[in-house]
Image (tube, rainbow, N blue to C red; front, side, top):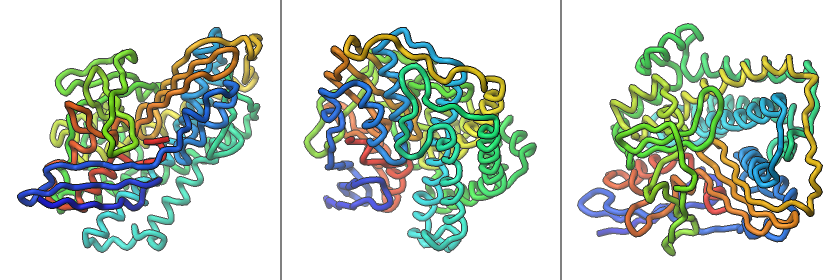
Length: 438
């Protein structure tokens, strides 16, 4: 038996993979994420509105999702908060934009360079030099301008407050945002799938992922060449807690049965082992995967239905689910932006007339972040935070084992025969160690 430790590169933060080898394959694995910043403790004793500024600093990539989960938790705790349709749409739009920038950046900067390490001559994806690598940087940087238009800045926006949003905007701003989104639609069609919109939608309706071209076709070919299309499966249990209308809704898949509901009271933290600073979270006592694969499988995406039937929750299926979700999100954003024109005169914010020091309550905020279901829970007494708890998507996916079960990503790595494949399978969950330990 041999123990091999590999420090993971190209991740946000620090993560170590400890592989226990025997008979030529991985017999056991530990994902070690050592650092912990204690954001939850930092929030205790502070005025509840401070959370709107502090929680987006949990992560530089998905900080906007933390803002949205936080503001929902505060609204739930305050009670009797009414949002205008205008505020709801803008929140949805900006949250979804952050997911898109993450997915594009992750594929071109984190996934494809792994194939160079496997010996593939794909110079266009070479870090800092390849033209596709550079183009992806530009596209992912450009799309977050939509958040800046409505939220003032990205990352670390704080424009959402209990009762709405703090920004007013013009029809010209909406048009600018639409123009940015259309440029990303063009990138998706020309570069990612290599098809016009009509051909893509025709393939989508029948779930014909084999007809996709462009960079996705290259990725599929490389997966098959390196025998990655069937490896990397975990438990096959999938979970989504948030909603992005109309393409994502809450639900879970037990491995045998799909249920269009999620009982938040069944989400529990259990005792975690000493080798990682990450929490252990279970749904109804069991480990579940969250993220784009869960979302697109549960929402009935035709591509993912056929992929899952053929390859289950494999490395290839997991990556393709994240890539193909980009289209679902772009399509939803276009419709919501167009809908904003008619709401331009609506109020952005309905103030709460309850004095801050009179606020008592508990609240929960659940949203879908780029990596999956994000949950914030808050307890407030006399306007002061007494408890704050965060369960990030990476806690679901990268969390360590409990007494009965391996973590989701740990389970997916067992049985692999190549250490680089082990890194790639782990990276298919979109590793973010700073979110994982926060």
